[in-house]
Length: 430
Image (cartoon, rainbow, N blue to C red; front, side, top):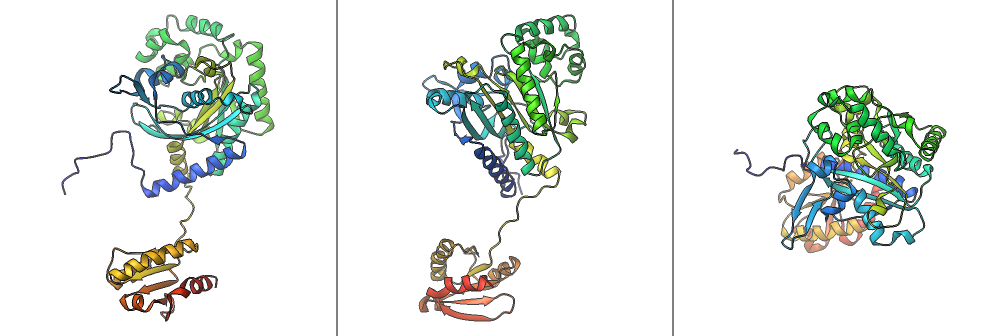
Protein backbone atom coordinates (compact mmCIF):
# COMPACT_ATOMS: atom_id res chain seq x y z
CA UNK A 1 0.00 0.00 0.00
CA UNK A 2 1.35 3.40 -0.98
CA UNK A 3 2.38 5.63 1.90
CA UNK A 4 -0.15 8.35 2.68
CA UNK A 5 0.78 11.77 1.36
CA UNK A 6 -0.41 13.47 4.53
CA UNK A 7 1.35 13.04 7.88
CA UNK A 8 1.15 14.91 11.16
CA UNK A 9 3.34 18.01 11.44
CA UNK A 10 6.76 17.32 12.97
CA UNK A 11 6.64 17.65 16.74
CA UNK A 12 2.83 17.57 16.87
CA UNK A 13 1.23 14.30 17.91
CA UNK A 14 -2.06 12.51 17.33
CA UNK A 15 -3.63 11.54 20.65
CA UNK A 16 -5.19 8.12 20.09
CA UNK A 17 -7.88 6.62 22.35
CA UNK A 18 -5.37 4.58 24.40
CA UNK A 19 -3.34 7.75 25.01
CA UNK A 20 -6.41 9.87 25.71
CA UNK A 21 -7.14 7.71 28.75
CA UNK A 22 -3.87 8.91 30.31
CA UNK A 23 -4.62 12.55 29.46
CA UNK A 24 -8.06 12.26 31.06
CA UNK A 25 -6.57 10.61 34.15
CA UNK A 26 -4.00 13.40 34.61
CA UNK A 27 -6.59 16.13 33.99
CA UNK A 28 -9.01 14.68 36.55
CA UNK A 29 -6.30 14.38 39.20
CA UNK A 30 -5.00 17.90 38.57
CA UNK A 31 -8.36 19.66 38.75
CA UNK A 32 -9.54 17.57 41.69
CA UNK A 33 -6.66 18.66 43.92
CA UNK A 34 -6.27 22.22 42.59
CA UNK A 35 -9.99 22.96 42.95
CA UNK A 36 -9.91 21.69 46.55
CA UNK A 37 -7.44 24.50 47.29
CA UNK A 38 -9.59 27.08 45.51
CA UNK A 39 -7.98 27.28 42.06
CA UNK A 40 -10.73 27.85 39.48
CA UNK A 41 -10.45 26.92 35.83
CA UNK A 42 -9.92 29.81 33.42
CA UNK A 43 -9.71 29.20 29.65
CA UNK A 44 -7.80 31.76 27.59
CA UNK A 45 -7.54 31.93 23.77
CA UNK A 46 -4.95 29.90 21.93
CA UNK A 47 -4.12 33.04 19.92
CA UNK A 48 -2.92 36.21 21.65
CA UNK A 49 -1.29 39.42 20.46
CA UNK A 50 2.42 38.77 19.95
CA UNK A 51 3.38 41.74 22.13
CA UNK A 52 1.91 39.98 25.17
CA UNK A 53 4.67 37.34 25.06
CA UNK A 54 7.38 39.62 23.70
CA UNK A 55 6.88 41.92 26.68
CA UNK A 56 5.88 39.36 29.30
CA UNK A 57 7.94 36.26 28.54
CA UNK A 58 10.88 38.48 27.59
CA UNK A 59 12.70 39.52 24.44
CA UNK A 60 15.90 37.78 25.58
CA UNK A 61 14.28 34.36 26.07
CA UNK A 62 14.64 31.47 23.64
CA UNK A 63 10.84 31.30 23.46
CA UNK A 64 10.51 34.81 22.00
CA UNK A 65 13.71 34.80 19.97
CA UNK A 66 13.39 31.38 18.34
CA UNK A 67 10.33 29.35 19.30
CA UNK A 68 7.10 31.33 18.83
CA UNK A 69 4.61 30.53 16.06
CA UNK A 70 3.71 33.99 14.76
CA UNK A 71 1.24 35.13 12.11
CA UNK A 72 -0.04 38.41 10.72
CA UNK A 73 -3.72 38.84 9.87
CA UNK A 74 -5.00 40.61 6.74
CA UNK A 75 -5.74 43.57 8.99
CA UNK A 76 -2.13 43.72 10.11
CA UNK A 77 -2.55 42.29 13.63
CA UNK A 78 0.47 40.34 14.82
CA UNK A 79 -0.68 37.23 16.65
CA UNK A 80 1.06 34.29 18.31
CA UNK A 81 0.00 30.74 19.21
CA UNK A 82 0.47 30.84 22.98
CA UNK A 83 3.82 29.31 24.04
CA UNK A 84 2.90 29.45 27.75
CA UNK A 85 -0.07 30.29 30.00
CA UNK A 86 1.21 32.86 32.50
CA UNK A 87 1.10 36.04 30.36
CA UNK A 88 -2.40 35.08 29.13
CA UNK A 89 -3.70 34.53 32.66
CA UNK A 90 -2.20 37.80 33.88
CA UNK A 91 -3.72 39.62 30.90
CA UNK A 92 -7.08 38.09 31.79
CA UNK A 93 -6.63 39.07 35.45
CA UNK A 94 -6.18 42.72 34.47
CA UNK A 95 -8.74 42.83 31.66
CA UNK A 96 -11.56 41.36 33.72
CA UNK A 97 -10.90 43.30 36.90
CA UNK A 98 -9.95 40.32 39.04
CA UNK A 99 -8.20 42.73 41.38
CA UNK A 100 -11.69 43.35 42.82
CA UNK A 101 -12.02 39.66 43.68
CA UNK A 102 -11.05 38.25 47.04
CA UNK A 103 -7.26 38.13 46.86
CA UNK A 104 -5.35 36.17 45.87
CA UNK A 105 -7.23 35.30 42.69
CA UNK A 106 -6.56 31.59 42.23
CA UNK A 107 -6.67 30.45 38.61
CA UNK A 108 -6.02 27.16 36.83
CA UNK A 109 -5.68 26.42 33.13
CA UNK A 110 -5.11 23.44 30.87
CA UNK A 111 -4.58 23.01 27.16
CA UNK A 112 -2.16 23.02 24.24
CA UNK A 113 0.88 25.29 23.92
CA UNK A 114 3.17 25.75 20.93
CA UNK A 115 6.93 26.22 20.65
CA UNK A 116 9.05 25.67 17.56
CA UNK A 117 11.96 23.80 19.14
CA UNK A 118 13.82 20.63 18.25
CA UNK A 119 11.58 17.64 19.06
CA UNK A 120 13.21 15.20 21.46
CA UNK A 121 12.34 13.07 24.45
CA UNK A 122 9.88 15.03 26.59
CA UNK A 123 9.76 17.99 24.18
CA UNK A 124 7.18 18.57 21.46
CA UNK A 125 6.20 21.54 19.33
CA UNK A 126 2.60 21.17 20.39
CA UNK A 127 2.33 20.07 23.99
CA UNK A 128 -0.11 20.30 26.87
CA UNK A 129 0.29 21.85 30.29
CA UNK A 130 -1.72 22.28 33.46
CA UNK A 131 -1.07 25.54 35.31
CA UNK A 132 -2.14 27.17 38.55
CA UNK A 133 -1.47 30.81 39.51
CA UNK A 134 -2.19 32.71 42.71
CA UNK A 135 -2.27 36.43 41.90
CA UNK A 136 -2.45 39.03 44.67
CA UNK A 137 -0.48 37.69 47.65
CA UNK A 138 3.21 38.08 48.52
CA UNK A 139 3.47 35.58 51.39
CA UNK A 140 5.90 32.65 50.95
CA UNK A 141 3.19 30.23 52.08
CA UNK A 142 1.53 30.73 48.65
CA UNK A 143 4.76 29.61 46.96
CA UNK A 144 4.69 26.53 49.14
CA UNK A 145 1.02 25.86 48.44
CA UNK A 146 1.67 25.85 44.69
CA UNK A 147 4.60 23.44 45.13
CA UNK A 148 2.60 21.27 47.56
CA UNK A 149 -0.37 21.00 45.18
CA UNK A 150 1.80 19.75 42.33
CA UNK A 151 3.58 17.27 44.60
CA UNK A 152 0.18 15.90 45.65
CA UNK A 153 -1.06 15.73 42.04
CA UNK A 154 2.00 13.70 41.04
CA UNK A 155 1.67 11.45 44.07
CA UNK A 156 -2.01 10.84 43.32
CA UNK A 157 -0.95 9.65 39.86
CA UNK A 158 1.52 7.20 41.36
CA UNK A 159 4.65 9.35 40.80
CA UNK A 160 6.21 9.46 44.26
CA UNK A 161 10.02 9.39 43.92
CA UNK A 162 10.37 13.09 43.18
CA UNK A 163 12.48 15.98 44.43
CA UNK A 164 11.74 19.71 44.43
CA UNK A 165 14.66 21.88 43.29
CA UNK A 166 14.31 25.36 44.83
CA UNK A 167 16.19 28.63 44.49
CA UNK A 168 15.64 32.37 44.74
CA UNK A 169 16.69 34.67 41.91
CA UNK A 170 16.17 37.80 43.98
CA UNK A 171 14.25 40.96 43.20
CA UNK A 172 14.98 44.33 41.53
CA UNK A 173 16.90 45.33 44.66
CA UNK A 174 19.44 42.52 44.67
CA UNK A 175 19.44 41.28 41.08
CA UNK A 176 21.59 44.15 39.67
CA UNK A 177 24.47 43.41 42.02
CA UNK A 178 24.31 39.70 41.26
CA UNK A 179 24.26 40.37 37.51
CA UNK A 180 27.45 42.43 37.95
CA UNK A 181 29.09 39.53 39.81
CA UNK A 182 28.12 37.15 37.01
CA UNK A 183 29.49 39.46 34.33
CA UNK A 184 32.77 39.68 36.23
CA UNK A 185 32.88 35.89 36.59
CA UNK A 186 32.17 35.17 32.91
CA UNK A 187 34.57 37.84 31.65
CA UNK A 188 37.36 36.00 29.89
CA UNK A 189 35.40 32.73 29.81
CA UNK A 190 33.38 33.48 26.65
CA UNK A 191 35.34 31.01 24.54
CA UNK A 192 34.27 28.19 26.87
CA UNK A 193 30.57 28.89 26.28
CA UNK A 194 28.26 27.58 23.57
CA UNK A 195 27.27 29.84 20.67
CA UNK A 196 23.86 30.66 22.18
CA UNK A 197 25.33 31.60 25.55
CA UNK A 198 27.80 34.00 23.96
CA UNK A 199 24.73 35.84 22.64
CA UNK A 200 22.80 35.48 25.91
CA UNK A 201 25.68 37.07 27.81
CA UNK A 202 24.94 40.36 26.06
CA UNK A 203 21.15 40.16 26.44
CA UNK A 204 20.53 38.62 29.88
CA UNK A 205 23.45 37.28 31.87
CA UNK A 206 21.17 35.17 34.10
CA UNK A 207 20.22 33.04 31.09
CA UNK A 208 23.72 31.54 31.12
CA UNK A 209 22.78 29.65 34.27
CA UNK A 210 19.81 28.05 32.48
CA UNK A 211 21.88 26.48 29.69
CA UNK A 212 22.20 22.69 29.75
CA UNK A 213 25.07 22.46 27.27
CA UNK A 214 27.81 20.27 28.76
CA UNK A 215 30.63 22.79 28.45
CA UNK A 216 28.44 25.61 29.77
CA UNK A 217 27.54 23.40 32.75
CA UNK A 218 31.25 23.07 33.55
CA UNK A 219 31.76 26.83 33.51
CA UNK A 220 28.58 27.42 35.52
CA UNK A 221 29.78 25.14 38.32
CA UNK A 222 32.15 27.81 39.61
CA UNK A 223 29.81 30.79 39.18
CA UNK A 224 28.77 32.81 42.26
CA UNK A 225 25.53 31.69 43.87
CA UNK A 226 22.71 34.21 44.14
CA UNK A 227 21.58 32.90 47.55
CA UNK A 228 24.79 34.43 48.95
CA UNK A 229 23.83 37.85 47.60
CA UNK A 230 20.10 38.23 48.36
CA UNK A 231 18.67 41.31 50.02
CA UNK A 232 17.11 40.77 53.46
CA UNK A 233 13.55 40.65 52.05
CA UNK A 234 14.44 37.93 49.52
CA UNK A 235 16.52 36.05 52.10
CA UNK A 236 13.61 35.95 54.54
CA UNK A 237 11.19 34.96 51.79
CA UNK A 238 13.35 32.00 50.77
CA UNK A 239 13.80 31.04 54.42
CA UNK A 240 10.02 31.03 54.85
CA UNK A 241 9.58 28.77 51.81
CA UNK A 242 12.20 26.25 52.95
CA UNK A 243 10.92 26.13 56.53
CA UNK A 244 7.37 25.46 55.30
CA UNK A 245 8.57 22.70 52.97
CA UNK A 246 10.40 21.14 55.92
CA UNK A 247 7.25 21.30 58.04
CA UNK A 248 5.14 19.70 55.31
CA UNK A 249 7.82 17.04 54.75
CA UNK A 250 8.14 17.87 51.06
CA UNK A 251 11.47 16.53 49.71
CA UNK A 252 13.57 19.36 48.28
CA UNK A 253 17.08 20.53 47.62
CA UNK A 254 18.46 24.03 47.27
CA UNK A 255 19.72 24.46 43.69
CA UNK A 256 21.74 27.70 43.77
CA UNK A 257 22.10 27.99 39.98
CA UNK A 258 18.44 27.31 39.11
CA UNK A 259 16.99 30.39 37.35
CA UNK A 260 14.34 29.07 34.91
CA UNK A 261 14.22 30.43 31.36
CA UNK A 262 11.72 33.28 31.62
CA UNK A 263 12.41 36.96 32.33
CA UNK A 264 9.48 37.64 34.66
CA UNK A 265 10.54 35.43 37.57
CA UNK A 266 11.40 37.01 40.93
CA UNK A 267 12.35 35.45 44.26
CA UNK A 268 11.26 31.78 44.37
CA UNK A 269 11.85 29.51 41.38
CA UNK A 270 11.49 25.74 41.45
CA UNK A 271 11.30 22.55 39.43
CA UNK A 272 10.02 19.08 40.32
CA UNK A 273 12.18 16.27 38.92
CA UNK A 274 12.00 12.47 39.35
CA UNK A 275 14.87 11.32 41.58
CA UNK A 276 15.85 8.62 39.08
CA UNK A 277 16.24 11.24 36.34
CA UNK A 278 18.33 13.49 38.61
CA UNK A 279 20.91 10.77 38.87
CA UNK A 280 21.31 10.25 35.11
CA UNK A 281 23.57 12.05 32.69
CA UNK A 282 22.58 13.53 29.34
CA UNK A 283 19.38 15.06 28.00
CA UNK A 284 16.99 13.12 30.20
CA UNK A 285 18.51 14.76 33.27
CA UNK A 286 17.07 18.19 32.42
CA UNK A 287 13.46 17.15 31.82
CA UNK A 288 11.41 18.42 34.77
CA UNK A 289 7.77 17.50 35.31
CA UNK A 290 6.78 20.82 36.89
CA UNK A 291 8.35 24.26 36.86
CA UNK A 292 7.39 27.64 38.18
CA UNK A 293 8.02 30.46 40.57
CA UNK A 294 7.10 33.95 41.63
CA UNK A 295 6.35 36.70 39.07
CA UNK A 296 5.70 39.74 41.26
CA UNK A 297 6.32 42.33 38.54
CA UNK A 298 4.28 40.93 35.65
CA UNK A 299 0.89 42.49 36.47
CA UNK A 300 2.49 45.96 36.73
CA UNK A 301 4.47 45.35 33.53
CA UNK A 302 1.16 44.81 31.71
CA UNK A 303 -0.31 48.05 33.03
CA UNK A 304 -2.00 46.79 36.18
CA UNK A 305 -1.33 47.66 39.80
CA UNK A 306 1.82 46.45 41.54
CA UNK A 307 0.63 42.91 42.36
CA UNK A 308 2.60 39.92 43.69
CA UNK A 309 1.93 36.52 42.09
CA UNK A 310 3.19 32.95 42.03
CA UNK A 311 2.41 29.95 39.84
CA UNK A 312 3.67 26.85 38.07
CA UNK A 313 2.87 24.54 35.19
CA UNK A 314 3.05 20.79 34.69
CA UNK A 315 3.96 19.14 31.39
CA UNK A 316 1.21 16.60 30.79
CA UNK A 317 3.07 14.58 28.12
CA UNK A 318 6.08 14.38 30.43
CA UNK A 319 3.95 13.18 33.32
CA UNK A 320 2.31 10.54 31.13
CA UNK A 321 5.72 9.36 29.90
CA UNK A 322 6.81 9.03 33.53
CA UNK A 323 3.65 7.10 34.43
CA UNK A 324 4.22 4.67 31.58
CA UNK A 325 7.89 4.21 32.43
CA UNK A 326 7.05 3.30 36.01
CA UNK A 327 4.27 0.92 34.94
CA UNK A 328 1.30 3.00 36.11
CA UNK A 329 -1.94 1.97 34.41
CA UNK A 330 -5.10 3.89 33.64
CA UNK A 331 -8.25 2.77 35.47
CA UNK A 332 -9.89 -0.29 33.97
CA UNK A 333 -12.50 0.59 31.36
CA UNK A 334 -16.05 -0.20 32.40
CA UNK A 335 -17.25 -2.91 30.03
CA UNK A 336 -20.88 -3.40 29.02
CA UNK A 337 -22.76 -6.31 30.58
CA UNK A 338 -25.37 -6.43 27.80
CA UNK A 339 -25.07 -6.39 24.01
CA UNK A 340 -27.70 -5.40 21.48
CA UNK A 341 -27.94 -7.74 18.48
CA UNK A 342 -30.10 -6.44 15.60
CA UNK A 343 -31.23 -7.99 12.31
CA UNK A 344 -32.58 -5.74 9.55
CA UNK A 345 -33.07 -2.02 9.01
CA UNK A 346 -36.19 -1.70 11.18
CA UNK A 347 -34.39 -3.46 14.01
CA UNK A 348 -31.45 -1.07 13.69
CA UNK A 349 -33.75 1.93 14.05
CA UNK A 350 -35.56 0.40 17.02
CA UNK A 351 -32.18 -0.57 18.44
CA UNK A 352 -30.96 3.04 18.29
CA UNK A 353 -33.98 4.12 20.29
CA UNK A 354 -33.49 1.27 22.77
CA UNK A 355 -29.81 2.20 23.24
CA UNK A 356 -30.87 5.68 24.30
CA UNK A 357 -33.40 4.20 26.73
CA UNK A 358 -30.61 2.10 28.26
CA UNK A 359 -28.32 5.15 28.49
CA UNK A 360 -31.02 7.16 30.27
CA UNK A 361 -31.47 4.26 32.70
CA UNK A 362 -27.74 4.15 33.44
CA UNK A 363 -27.18 0.78 31.73
CA UNK A 364 -24.05 0.49 29.57
CA UNK A 365 -24.74 -1.54 26.41
CA UNK A 366 -22.53 -2.72 23.59
CA UNK A 367 -23.64 -2.82 19.93
CA UNK A 368 -22.50 -3.42 16.36
CA UNK A 369 -25.09 -1.54 14.28
CA UNK A 370 -22.87 -1.70 11.21
CA UNK A 371 -23.10 -5.49 11.05
CA UNK A 372 -26.16 -7.16 9.54
CA UNK A 373 -25.82 -10.89 10.25
CA UNK A 374 -26.25 -12.41 13.69
CA UNK A 375 -23.07 -14.54 13.82
CA UNK A 376 -20.41 -11.75 13.89
CA UNK A 377 -22.52 -9.83 16.39
CA UNK A 378 -22.75 -12.81 18.73
CA UNK A 379 -19.00 -13.44 18.35
CA UNK A 380 -18.33 -9.85 19.41
CA UNK A 381 -20.74 -10.14 22.33
CA UNK A 382 -18.91 -13.28 23.43
CA UNK A 383 -15.51 -11.54 23.19
CA UNK A 384 -16.80 -8.70 25.33
CA UNK A 385 -17.90 -11.30 27.91
CA UNK A 386 -21.32 -9.71 28.39
CA UNK A 387 -23.91 -11.40 30.60
CA UNK A 388 -26.84 -11.01 28.19
CA UNK A 389 -27.40 -10.54 24.47
CA UNK A 390 -30.61 -8.73 23.51
CA UNK A 391 -31.75 -9.95 20.09
CA UNK A 392 -34.00 -7.76 18.00
CA UNK A 393 -35.21 -8.88 14.56
CA UNK A 394 -38.04 -8.03 12.15
CA UNK A 395 -40.56 -10.20 14.04
CA UNK A 396 -39.62 -8.73 17.44
CA UNK A 397 -40.01 -5.18 16.12
CA UNK A 398 -43.43 -6.04 14.67
CA UNK A 399 -44.56 -7.65 17.95
CA UNK A 400 -42.85 -5.04 20.17
CA UNK A 401 -40.88 -7.75 21.96
CA UNK A 402 -37.20 -8.63 22.43
CA UNK A 403 -35.22 -11.82 23.08
CA UNK A 404 -32.95 -11.96 26.14
CA UNK A 405 -30.21 -14.57 25.75
CA UNK A 406 -28.18 -15.65 28.79
CA UNK A 407 -24.63 -15.87 27.41
CA UNK A 408 -23.50 -18.35 30.06
CA UNK A 409 -26.35 -20.86 30.00
CA UNK A 410 -27.55 -20.23 26.44
CA UNK A 411 -31.16 -20.01 27.60
CA UNK A 412 -33.46 -17.50 25.89
CA UNK A 413 -36.62 -15.67 26.87
CA UNK A 414 -38.98 -13.45 24.88
CA UNK A 415 -40.33 -10.48 26.85
CA UNK A 416 -42.40 -7.37 26.00
CA UNK A 417 -40.25 -4.42 24.95
CA UNK A 418 -41.76 -2.16 27.61
CA UNK A 419 -40.43 -4.46 30.36
CA UNK A 420 -36.85 -4.90 29.10
CA UNK A 421 -35.31 -2.12 31.22
CA UNK A 422 -36.89 -3.43 34.43
CA UNK A 423 -35.95 -7.06 33.68
CA UNK A 424 -32.34 -6.24 32.77
CA UNK A 425 -31.87 -4.08 35.88
CA UNK A 426 -33.15 -6.92 38.06
CA UNK A 427 -30.92 -9.53 36.40
CA UNK A 428 -27.78 -7.36 36.57
CA UNK A 429 -28.23 -7.01 40.34
CA UNK A 430 -27.84 -10.77 40.85
